[in-house]
Image 1 (cartoon, rainbow, N blue to C red):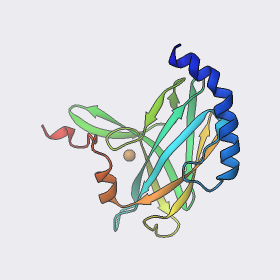
Image 2: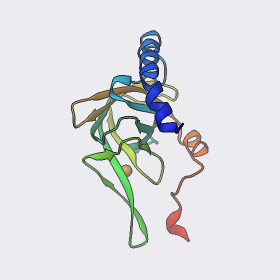
Image 3: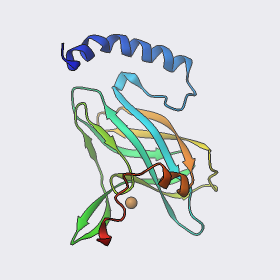
Image 4: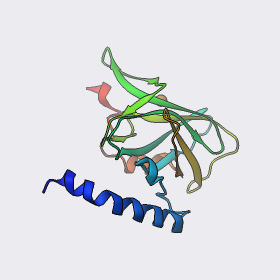
Length: 172
Ligand SMILES: [Cu+2]
């Protein structure tokens, strides 16, 4: 039996379990909305460096649905503005640019990480604290919204947890 048909068989059970556990674990870190078949994990917001007007955020997004979805907006509690950015090589330089919508194909996993897609966050309403949990909301073009809790992390811990970082690509 293929993995996919197994998954199809199991999906109703998984959905039922998900609904049950999300009701029980309303405050769990990896809370997600199973109805949308979109799962968000490991959301992190890097603490602002002294004097810096922006910081970065990362997360993992999985579309378990059979159709593509489009992420159109992200908001984070206590932060005035959040943008979705991507990195691109332009004439041998890594540049980042804002993207308005981001498509996640059916059954695709998208990792927001250093050197790739990331969130840029601006305008903190008060200083962030390491370990603090902030409510993060993802908005999709079909009207769906998915909530998660993002942890505030230090730059040091974020570098330590991101060994696949491609940030230094421009230096060879
Ligand atoms: Cu950026």
